Image (cartoon, rainbow, N blue to C red; front, side, top):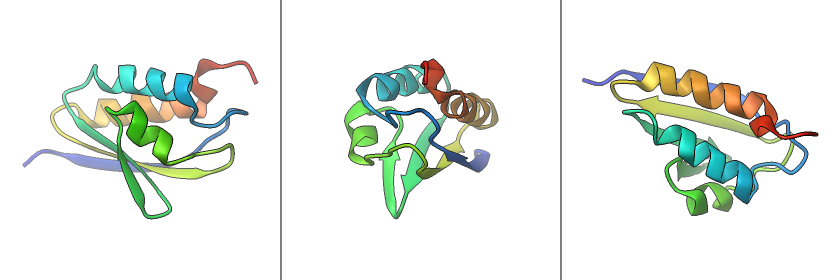
Amino acid sequence: MADKFQQTVTIVNQLGLHARAATKLVQLCRQFDAKIELQQEGQTADASSVLALLMLASSKGKTLEVCTQGAEAQHALTAVVALIENGFDEEN
């Protein structure tokens, strides 16, 4: 059975999980052999879909649960959390 990992992270960038940030997250997630999902307030989004991520409407200060499963799940989790914690590499 594939490994599963999860971690809570807070959106820190001013504009939240907007289109450019979601696109950057999707591009990162596609690099890993893992299923990656973000959960917020009972909603789950597939991190390989920009539209699904935008539907979360995650604004600054919102808390997300990052869930990963698969061969590269641990590496994927570390990378996704780092991107979110770094504000998607945007200027604040």
